[in-house]
Amino acid sequence: QTEQTIQYDGLVEFSDFYATFADIVDADDSTDGQSFLPVLKGESTKFYRETAFVHYDPKWGKNVNRYRNQFVQTPNYKLYQDGRFYNLQTDKLEQNDLVSTVLSPKEMAIKKRLETEMRLHPEFE
Image 1: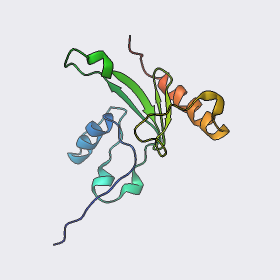
Image 2: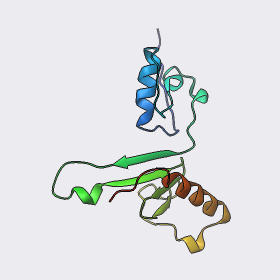
Image 3: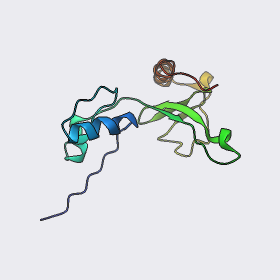
């Protein structure tokens, strides 16, 4: 028996874990997550997520507010709640926020789509 290595470069949201666990045990799932069981079975083309939303609110340390955040991303672009927008292919460490005045038409369309997705979720206060 040979060991199979699974590599998936797409997006997975936290909500997808519950949907996947429900799928594994053949239980009903009423969440908005998507099962990524096909990825685990080596059928990754049957699972695709265009965007992923992350709400990160750690409860540790004196600098907790420094790290709490919300963002939505595609595989190549990431938009934070405060408007910072990054090209993840050319800036994996997110050091150079893309300035709206120099965005290409394609980047402007992606940013607008991510802004629409961000508005679907409650904001940090």
